[in-house]
Image (cartoon, rainbow, N blue to C red; front, side, top):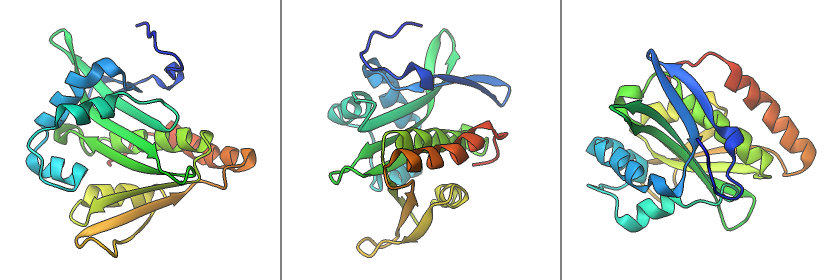
Length: 204
């Protein structure tokens, strides 16, 4: 598989085996727009609500374009996919987008229901934390519904703090401090998440 995009981080491509199936994890590509739309379209209404914090029957074209056209530095997105019937099928996506302060980034993860509980979300989160630390991001933040117990459990196991949103009822805020952006802090943040990547996947 050859990629022609400048600065495409091919080093993040990985292959794992889950549920006796080969799963490829890779950075998203602009041509993944249809795959991304199909992934979110196949999620349950509850899962889409958890991901976007609002009811959403489908993703508007402008949003799928923004989700797939990333710069891999300020906006990093990973997809996990399987190959069936001669085609690709996205089963999970995870991303961070750097916020206006330059030192923080917002995190989001979605995993298709049949693939939950296999450690895929934990693996994607660990990869994002490593990449964010290497990019000099000091803080990862996110929002999740208070009813999203899987995401809350995943965040806590990964060392995030979890607290109630002071502005939105039923929403929790998650936060992880990666360091102060210096080279020493980046290395300190990368070391434990690399160990996490090497661990056997657990339910997440």
